[in-house]
Length: 107
Image 1 (cartoon, rainbow, N blue to C red):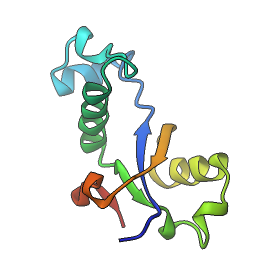
Image 2: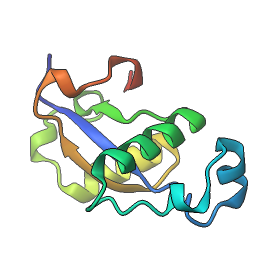
Image 3: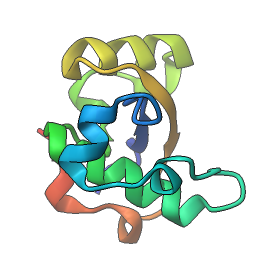
Image 4: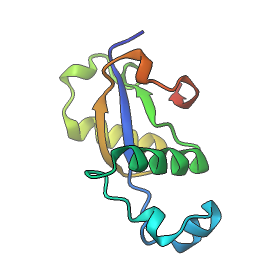
């Protein structure tokens, strides 16, 4: 498996999107998760929204760039946003293939 897989946290604006909150059956408390204090819950919320909108949470950067390790953070973020239509809140390289959910990969 390539070492250029990343995990993406998208900017879904769920905190202010009441329609999305209703569609997903979420309470105000559900969407006000502090990712620094509750990273697992924040990751699950990101995954729930990504599945709802059909965007991946894991992406192989080799599909976008010949040499992903030489790309700037801004170049990666712009490519992901352009491809998937959502702003990127954060992304990081995946440490091991055990972390990758193969069903959510972008191919």
